[in-house]
Length: 176
Image (cartoon, rainbow, N blue to C red; front, side):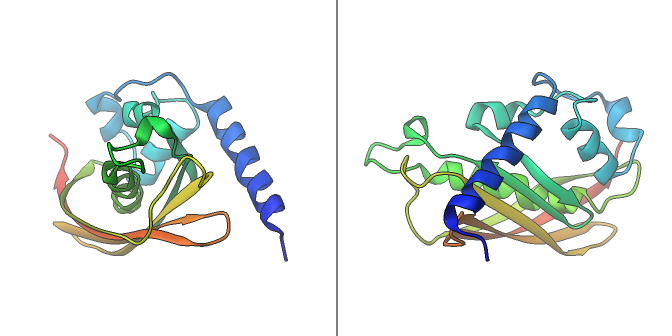
C-alpha cells in the first residue's frame, strides 16, 4: 500500500517526465492528423513529435497516461484558475474533463477519422483550491461507433477523493 506522500511523489515525477518530452504549443496539420490512428496521433503529440496542445499550456495540465479507450490528464489548480468567489472556476473542471473524455474517444478512432464534442455533462462534487494539489482527470470510453462516441470521466486527487465526474457524447467524422 502506497502512502499519500509516495503517490504525490510518483505523480510529480511523472509530470516532470512528460513535461520534458512535450514540444512547444501549436496545432498539428491536417496531414499529420490524417496520417495515423487516434491513439497514434495522441502519442505523437505526447512524445514531442507533434506540437503540444495550446489549451494544456493555458490551463497548465498535461497528458499522463494513454491507451486505447483510456486517457489521463494531470493538473494542479492554482489561484490563476480562481473565480471571483475564491475557488477554482468550473471551467477548469470542464476543460480538464472535456480533454480526458474527448481524447479517450479519439484514442479509439481509426486512421482518417476525427471527433468533436457534441455534449458534455459535468457534475462538480466538491471545490478545488490552490491547496488541493495535483488532480487527475481520467476519461474512459463507454462506446465508439461510426458516428458517435460516448465516454465518462472523473477528477480525483492523490487520495482518490472525487471532485467531479462527467459524460460526453462526441460526433465522429471522416477528416476531409
